[in-house]
Length: 96
Image 1 (cartoon, rainbow, N blue to C red):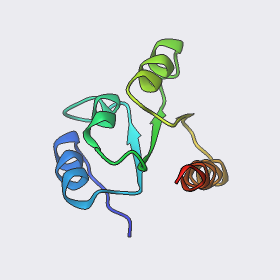
Image 2 (cartoon, rainbow, N blue to C red):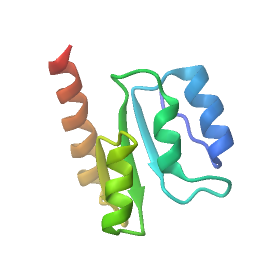
Image 3 (tube, one colour):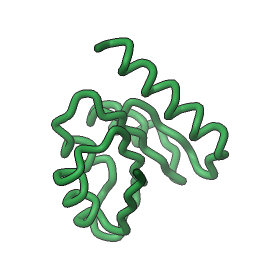
């Protein structure tokens, strides 16, 4: 199942309720910063991917510091996104 959210507040509610396998978060949300939402999932098996159009070394470092498993720069090609999700999910399943 895929869930979407337009705001950080909406995303936070869904993260707490659904316990997703994958979080795909944009850095710039209307009401918050997607990087800060990385810490909202208590599930260590949740794959966390940041997507941004504002690629800087600082954003990449902050994403990693907050627990991002990967960092993609817009425009993201569908194959790149799917490959990244597949690779990260495979890495999680190998750990367990």
